[in-house]
Length: 601
Image (cartoon, rainbow, N blue to C red):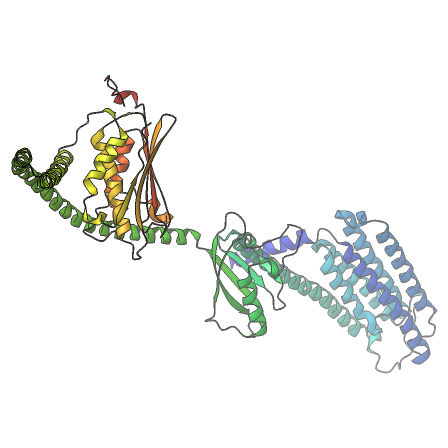
């Protein structure tokens, strides 16, 4: 009860503050009501004098109407002169004077047309209600008190034995005229006073409750609006005519071509929203069809939005429009993509680990085979030397020219086998960090010697374009031969992987550009696309079948040529072959240089 009393006191105070000023619209409303009253007085004077003659003279009544009209014209002229009459206490006093003058004119009109017996005495109540609506509480009660006093004056005149001057009684039958009975007039006066007070009180209570309801609705509206504007999710509300009735700041980022002074229209929003609203306007959308769709916001910093919609209806089931809420899922999508990428990377790493285990096992086999080949080459060297000595001896003893030529062919092939074994032993020795001035042509020839007798080289033509003008280069010969061997083997494998019968050519060219020696190796193999070419130097990356490649050849070559202060690059297209460019500086870095006499070319 205490809370209710405090709430009511607060509302009354709010209403008191609200009625501490009067608006121009309320002034004009009063003026319009008076014009109606003037017209009513003129019509009533004609009816009570000519149609139903109940008064002796209509002149006094017309005079009251004329006075009311003149006063109203003055009020109207004042209102037209400026709005400063409506502000603050001046406006309230001006309104109070008007109401009080209206009461005096009404009292004069009643005095001249029957007094309290005139049915229009109830118009007093109208003035009380109007005062309760537009005036503060103390002024409204002042008007109520003035009304009771004026009615009391009319009642006293009604019961006096000698009527006051100018009073016109109604021409009614005197029999049963209760207004000439003092007790009845007193009772009427008490009843009228109670009616005035009660009307004033009830009007005030109604205004208080209406004001409280309006303020509560306004507060709820402000809270709801603030909540909607503070939402991270975008929200728009579309009325049944397809107009944007509400749009919070988050949803404003969905629009295109909108300025602050332009009205929002549906065409400014993404197409999925427009299609959803148009479909809702043409047909009923069930609650299960809430998914509107996804779209990207315009602008450089595009965001991914997922929107859902729902029809809005009142308590009677009538459609009020559609509300659409959009959630920014950009971060979720990015996180999802990142997780997917990480999952793919983990899967790729697992596959690489599996391949690495297989490749490491294959490498161990190759190492074992290499060791065996080194031992076999050493063992073959001894009987091969004996065979060479015997052939040379027979060459000196035999005199037949045909037999001598045949022995020379045998000796040539023995020397060829010996040279191959020597290269195998040299290549199988542990790598050293020894740098010296080296001939690039000689290193290329030495490396080609190792691969040209491979079975895979049978269908490949080698074009080794020797450039006798190249300077010697300061480098580690074994490292550079390793680089060349890896590049040559990849080129041979690429050409053997072709399915057509087009010619296979391995072309090696070299030149010198400034202080850099360039070696270009071209093949006519299957080639590769740009994506594969970019990954060619990654460790364990290979396009060959398991067991046929380790994915370490070009990776090792890249590291070795980087140690030489050089570079390696690849240009390739599918089905058009590959070109590998090796670039090595003639003069090394300072920390690689050791004084040594340069070998003459």
